Length: 625
Image (tube, rainbow, N blue to C red):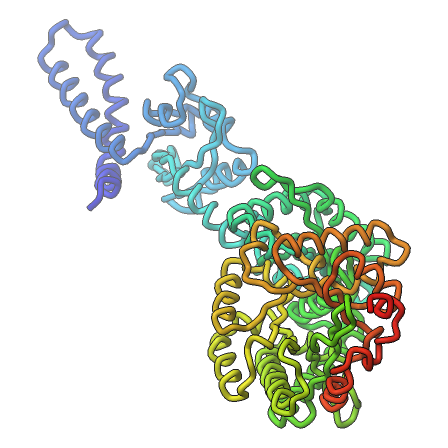
């Protein structure tokens, strides 16, 4: 039996005896005043009472209990010294009134305690409540009491003891809080969010005119920032942003964290202005930089919004549609927002159908083929090689744009087998051109490699198998990896790139300038080529600032001993400007659109003589000749 149980048993067996002992002391002292000094009988009685009281006091204190005895007829309450001490009160701080107890009870708990003590429904009572201590702090107490009845069976006294249970109650409160809140940010967790959304949906079923909305708030580039500055710093950013969002929301709006995203439930939306208000408040929270270590980091938010409708039956349906709207918003660019509508739902259905058809096309292989766009040496107009680009000849829809099916492949994971198909076909075609004597020794074929493909298990082995089975010269195969992919996991990608370099493959960083770059990493990658994104080339005309950006990128590449390819060359002015900036290579509609393998082979034969190339008459090239 533990100490508390032992003390409780001692109390149950001796509480009334002990309490009676207090009164016996008083009676004995009164008799002693009247008796002859030194009376042996009085001395023996006093000593017996003292010993009994001492034993009882030790047992009760060992159990951490403070005693009380409330005489209902007189209203007098006797509080033991330990009852007072556990509240940090001195002997004189508590009198003999019940108000000396009740006035220290928390207002929210008073009615509960008073009703329990006054109800007399049971002979044994057990109540929990908070009391104000002498240090003016609230602590949880537990009262266990028994009713003492007189000769007429009426309750004459309430006697019992009080325990300090603050530590246990604090642990219970914390456990309850943790069960319903996110451990990092302290926000209501997903379970709470779903429960509240379910209640809103039930309300909408009863009142179809009631509006609501769910906002998914995605932190743009959060993964790249998190990987760059460390996960703990990323967690600090989430906590800071949650702290900014909370005071900007209305009391009826629920904010939760869903991984690297936030979700907001607005349970009453009247019009478009309410939606705009929430969007504005979210962007206001993201308007200031977050301090991470010794630097300020700016982060934007993209929002996907699902507006309530009677057709929703499940909270997950609402979150799904908000996620669809978010994906569409991010496809249009970061920092914006999109509201889900039925047309989007139809597009999702089209997406699923297209995914199924793409899977079948990959299995059959007949509908997929590579087109080749020429890459030209800007100084002399010679054909340097081609970039291989995937095309899908759909049996019903005709030629499907890669803008439509490549993102689909990325999202579904089909990009991995699709990427292998592209690499194998490009290597096979290059080997064929070599055997036919069409491809010069220094001409290459570039193939795009997605981030998902690069980090997929077995990717290195599949590259080795393709090179071996096709017989292609790896020094004439250039793999293009986008800047954002490289910077998402720089250390891991760097290791993978070195493995590819050991196979004698050439490597290029694609779409440079559009992602999140770190120059401290860039010089360590085993790259051969840097490709300037077409958006910079197109914007150069009449824009001195953009031209200066292109010049800086070219100089950076040359300082790292990298060749430069400029994409999107469409006019002689573009060609002239890029040559002046020292770009070695270029591709774009000025030199030719992507074309099937047969047309590319014909171009190889024609371009063997630079003067016979279709672009040979361009003014900047003619001037160079």
